[in-house]
Image (cartoon, rainbow, N blue to C red):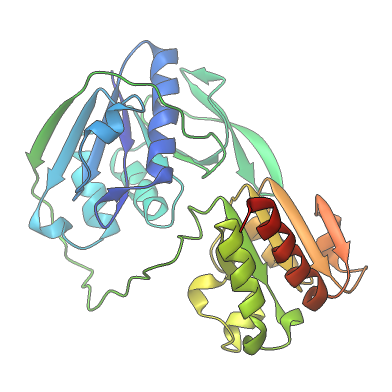
Length: 315
């Protein structure tokens, strides 16, 4: 039986999370001696993009009920074509669809998986637990398994194969959810896709001082983020709020400026590979989880750091 993977797209384009999920599915398929079937809804990118990472077949699902994101309708549509092991990226939208599909297919659900499985029958893999503060080995029961892959944990791996494409009309209902309006950010990096994130808190003293954070982010090619108190008081938009109650991030580099490090914030960024903390308070809790810490005034450190990076890049 093929290994299935849900290839989420954003405005029709496949992003890093989808390609990472295909890479993971290809590894599982190789262990199982089978191939990968990618299933997508409303893509505009060509199927060739997915062949490059190991998908031997790409199935595009079509239905009027799928024009706007509806987790229940998406799960019902996927259930018409998938079986056995189904891989999802652990993104906000995909993580809403995966458990619904698991219920429909009476499947085991393994979320936030961080590495290739140690076994495929029964399926067993390491996953994050306790808000990313610990890991556990989880074993599925039965042949039907839905797996969500933690973003930026497994990596995107090219594994080109010859592929084919199929377009399938499905009959599903969009009842229970009405999309009234959609607002999409533009011109900024997606926080969950960003390799580098520059985040700041109340230590910046006011929204008028965010220029230096944005400049550092621009030099690094990074996304900007903030702590919950900053978004709550309106200094920055809620779309930039990271943490357990905001957007979780798993960047390669996370720079925290003027953030004390509440447990909810740390839980949301704990999957980032390298954490740099800049704070005037040497007792700030964030230093306990930092890979690198700088005790000092951000208003002096950030401009100096930005200029140094510019010099290294030849700007």
